[in-house]
Structure formats: structure tokens, C-alpha cells
Length: 449
Image (cartoon, rainbow, N blue to C red; front, side, top):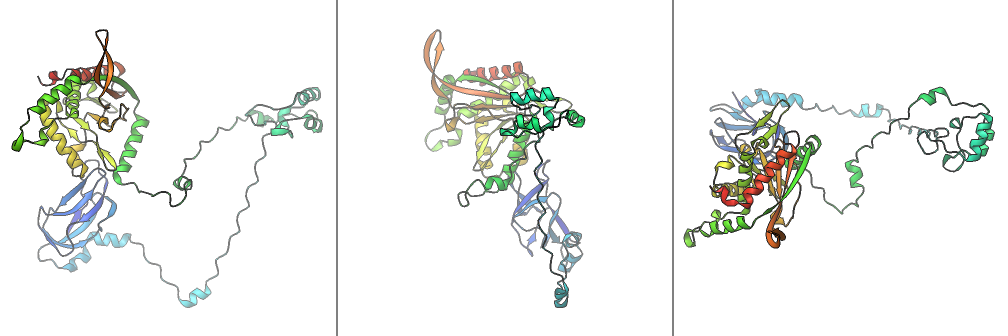
């Protein structure tokens, strides 16, 4: 019988994906392990391997199709010796035929002539504007009336709240009081009725936004899966996570000196390996990993019933993509040498930019490091990446005046901003974590021993 090839779940949270490309066509023979298609998730493009062997009998989902649900049949394989006629009885094709809408039969010429012309509906009369509340003017519950009108109303026993003012901006004037019936009282129901609460303004629609700009002055770039996921997760983060922020200036002179010395020990000439060279970011990853070990209660994740206190420091590192962002994770970073962190980070960043990361390489983690120093940014605050409880944002190292032993000196200083989830990391705990990070950065030899 025919074999269904299903849309695979490439990660525990994946619900749908885009079928980017077929690498086989109908009639091709495939063996177990052959790469047959490329699937795009919100974070990566991954190859799909055949788990059975046979002949591709029918491609059910065309390449380029977006939002294909997990476990939906995308192709059918014919087993050895099986004829193409077997496809007609395949459950997947029968299901597709049932779900396809039946075409309506075309009317005959006689039926067309007998059809009545569609009635042209007249537009519904627009509702008349509601009259303004009597005597309210333009303020909720406040009565606008001239002093003379107030005095006359008091003398004649007339309730100003029952009058509609004819003066400027609804103001009640002498003429309104003179024309009113003496003893007019405000209806009890109106007096008891509370003022209606103002309804929130509806969100501006896509069409309304587009109408603000002249046609031809912009290009509409549809959101891809990654952009939608970034938007959804960060809106959720800012809405649901109570952020607070801590800042610290870290002096980098000792770290820069140590980095220069270590890089100078790299092999020269034909044996030189450019991948060996350490970056400042490699040291910062190590410093953050060790700081989490020194302050273990901050190495945590919030759940509804418990805090998960992690044993290892799995540091996610923000990597910019041409139109997005991804955070590959350095697992057990506290146990790795800086050179090992450097080599692993270079490999992850390279594959991240080509969307070749596996889900387990960018999911999870216990914190994130986001470095915009290479862009010349002095400092910034970052949005926490759930399920993390912290994210550390660092800016560029720049020469600044500092005070040492009562004297002004020049040092290379970097601003670090720690964003914390207050449900998990209280203020003092966050301060301890940032202080530990600063200590490792300013005394980098402590990271090597």
C-alpha cells in the first residue's frame, strides 16, 4: 500500500511550517536517509530525510506552500512493485478530494434568461445624530450657564440640568431659562444613570496605516515566520514579564590586555588559524556563565508552580540575521575554555546566518547576552527572551575618564545593562549577578583559573 510522507515536527513546539523546496519529483526513486525536501520553520531551514524507500507517486503539497500543519501528508510513496493506480485509493488523496469545494453547475441559457435581475438595495438611512445631553455643555456632569441664567433659574425653581443651552458651546443663557417651564426637574432616571465609560479607541487597521502614505512611496514586505515569531514573543514578554533594569560600567583594560596576549600566542605563518582568535564577546560569555554559577538563584526560569534553578549556565547569544534575530545557545558555558567558547560561537553564528541551526541549538538556555558594541552603541536595554529570567545588554568599550585613587585617569569602559524578570530575580539578587559579572570582566585572569 502507499506510504504517506508527513510534515515533520522539527521541534517540540512546532505546529506548522513552510514547505520551501522539493528535492525530488514524481517518479523518482528514494531510499531511506535520502534528503527529499527543505522545510522552513520560524528559525531555520532544515532538510527532511526519507524514512522509507519507494517511488514518489504523488506530491500532495506543492513547494512554496506556507503554514502546513505538522503530520499532514505532503507526499505519497509507492512501494516496490506497486502501480500508480494504487494512489486512487490512498486515504490522503480521498481526504483532499472531500475537502475540496464542489464546483457549482453552470446554468443553462434558458435558466439564465429566467433568472431575475438582482435588486439594487437602497442605502440605509443614516442614523440621526444623538442630541447632546441637556445642560451638560462639553464637560461630564458639569453645567455651563451664565451667572444671570443661574440666578433666574434659582428664583423660578428651574433645574438647569434639564435645559439644553443655546449659547456658545452649549452654554445656558437667560433666554433658555425664560423659555423653560417653571418647576422643571431633571428626570430621576437621568440623575441616577452613571456617565457611560469611554470606549477604547479601536486599533488602527492595516488599510488605515497604508492610506497615510502615497501609493508608490513604499514597498510592502510581507512578514515571514521568523518576523511573526519575534513580534509575538516580544510582545508577550513586555506584556507579561515585569522587567526592571540595572546598569554597571565595566573597565575593560585588563581584559583587552589579556586577550591581546592570548591571541599573540596563536600559531603564525602557514599554521595560523584565524578561527583561533578570541573576541571580547567570548570573554563576556564566559564571565556571564561564571556569574550565574556564583549567584545560582539568578540562574532560574519562572513557571506557574515553581522556579527552575538550573545547574549549568546555558548562555544564548543574540546573532543578527539579514531580517531577524536568533539566539544560539552555548551549553555548559561555565565548564568550557574561552577558546572552546570562541570556536563554538563562530560555528553557531555561521550556521545561524544560513538558517542551518538545529532546534536544540537555539531553544532553551538560561540567559542571553546581546552585544551591540560592534555597532558603536554606548548602551541599551534589552527585552527578556522567554523562558529566560535575565538578559544582559552590553555596548561598546570606549575611553572615558575615571577616578582612581582620587585622580582622573582614562580607561576603556563598557556599559552593561541587566534586564531581570522581577518574578524570579529580585532587585538585590540581580545586583549580585551584575556585580559578579563586572568582577570577572575587570579581573579576567579569574576566568582562567
